[in-house]
Length: 353
Ligand SMILES: [Zn+2]
Image (tube, helix red, strand yellow):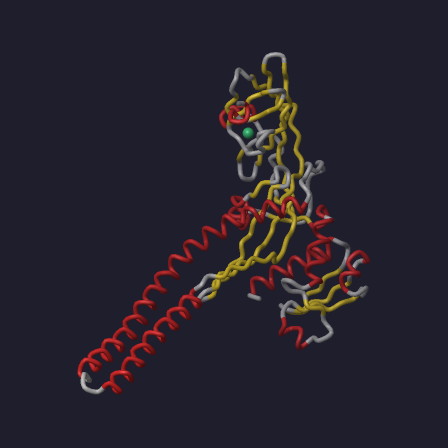
């Protein structure tokens, strides 16, 4: 594990154990002591006081410790616990903007209502709530003739169950604390397994893009190697053929040279196969850590009238990223900029038919 990963896992373990009511005491970078609350003891063999080692080296010097790294059952158990007890293992993204002035105008500029729909909003119909993100840390390895590893951090918005890579970019600059300064309710949230599926689907696309750019560089190196190997063995074969020409009177010598030429060409093929295998790209993705973040957002109740039908729509405004979260079409579930009411449902023009 890289130092960064050890830090991530250790921070996650500390947050998880403390949020569950336990005590976490870091001894040094790779070893810690923890007093576990009852709920976490089954994950650690029923013990209440444990030592944790965050890499193999630390385990060697602390053989009594429980190893807590990516892929160990103990870490899986902590992740599962954190997923089940979301509210208690939360970081909180701070903001004090709990109302949205001009919410109606913002919505009107972002969303077009078609089919003669009318949009209404009363600014008193706004409510601040803690909206949650599940933040997944994936370890991605791209291995060919060289190994590249990176940690991909992806928050999933649990209100909409959508990937929020833009939050990952903003996170380093945001104030994240553990306390909730506002007495406001929680917004509904998607189950963690659903959010994890969303993260995996997003990651697949991301891995595809990374593989492409990585593969392009690998292919250039492969081409250079293929040319070098081909030139070398073809050179040997050419030299042998010239000698073959000069041995017109000696059939035994010629047979011997024929065999040598064939062997050189076989060797070339073998080397080319070996090289192709060495450059073949293998990708692995693992979940390294997960945590929950909460952030106040402004939820506004909107009314959409079309003829005799009125539909209610709740929209979320994110005061941290300063943007409206797009509503989803009730038929295809995609986030949309254009909406209409059809058959009593709020749908995109495509689904309205
Ligand atoms: Zn649709």
